Length: 268
Image (cartoon, rainbow, N blue to C red; front, top):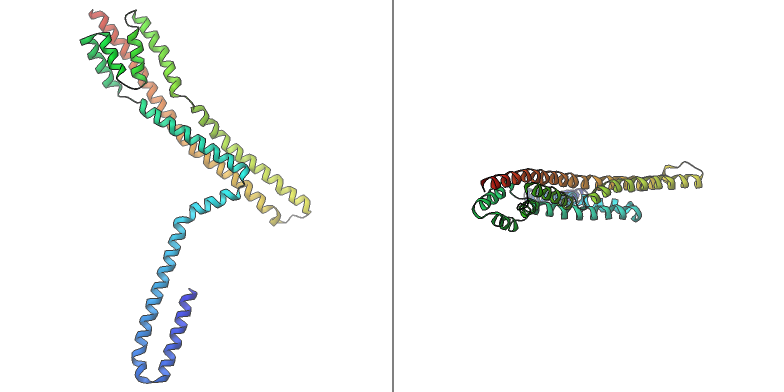
């Protein structure tokens, strides 16, 4: 805006001088000056709008970085470590669970067709060529099918517990980081408040400027701890829902397998 006012003042001065010089030039010069002023005004406004848009586009992450630095490296670094480790475990679990998801209905149909056409070994070959915990459970049950239905059922139940443990592997660490991040933030808040009151005690005066910095740092640690907990909680809930879905598929598939084995033995 200061540039705009300067240009307008200079233009007005030039315009006034030209009016005093001669009347003929006064008839043509104002048009040129007005065009110059208009072009300069539009250019300055566009530059200011572009600068404002640039500040808005990059301001949030720069502000976040600045706040993180102001929070102090002691607790903020530990909170950041919780976020990194929690996200690493969450991403690994999500990839593993997605790879473990299979079409149980199609697998059951393929196993049943192979069982009726080629027997136990053909059905086991179908399970070997299929990835996922459901196929592994099918294989264990079929491997004990020659003994008895009860043996096959026990094998399915036992190996189902093993597969469930594989699905839930390292998930408890995510819940630990969810609880640890805000607790570290609260600890930073308490320590910051203690330091602020120490400054008040040392100064012997209740001056807001003495404690504002300490309280600000204390609150920043709490905010970042809560942000980390919220992010990890979203991933944790997704992982738990995915595990529950796979476990339900495993239970349904186990019942279907036992029914198939009973029908197969009855036909023999």
